Length: 258
Image 1: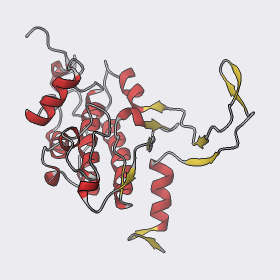
Image 2: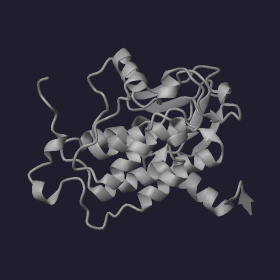
Image 3: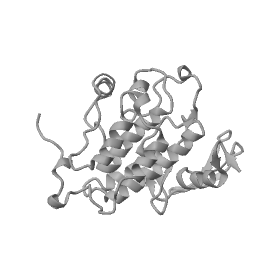
Image 4: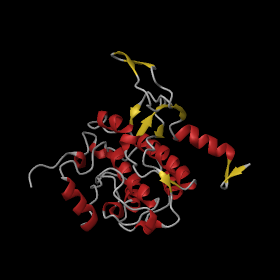
């Protein structure tokens, strides 16, 4: 059996492995006692309770912050990126646009596999791009066309993935010192993008650049991104800290002064 050209076994694998699982929901939560760290709380009436898969690894963003100083091994970078890319590729194959792709919305299971979560603003992709407009998403990850209030499609997720890929590699935040207006103007009018470290392998840097291209039509589809990441050689384990810079890669140090 197949589902939109994808075998059912592959569909089941992708949904189980790369998407946070939805267990169930109920509106009949009145009087329900919920256990918390501070004891029990009683749920008010008419509150919708949603039960989802528990992912003990927490948010990918928190994991990256913990590794900000020492960074991640290159193999880990590619594996995390592939998890996210495969999940997005599956969503796009089902005509679903997430619209808020960011490391804060990606959770880790006990084996450190990335799972896509928070589908609060996700929607089925409109056949007419003009039906999808508005500034939906999170500043710093939003594509230029979204920030500009122009029509957009699934390629806005590809742009956001490019920012996430940079974040996974650098274990840092894009544009930490810019205001809302500065960031918006920079991304839309000046082609502002995070600076790719000099020690980043060109194969990975090229994926970032293609994903965050200002022209949505020039961005790759997510299945192509998966193929590009799979083709990157991680056998030598290099890329993060070059062999001749074992004391630390200078391109990760924050610049001081003007």
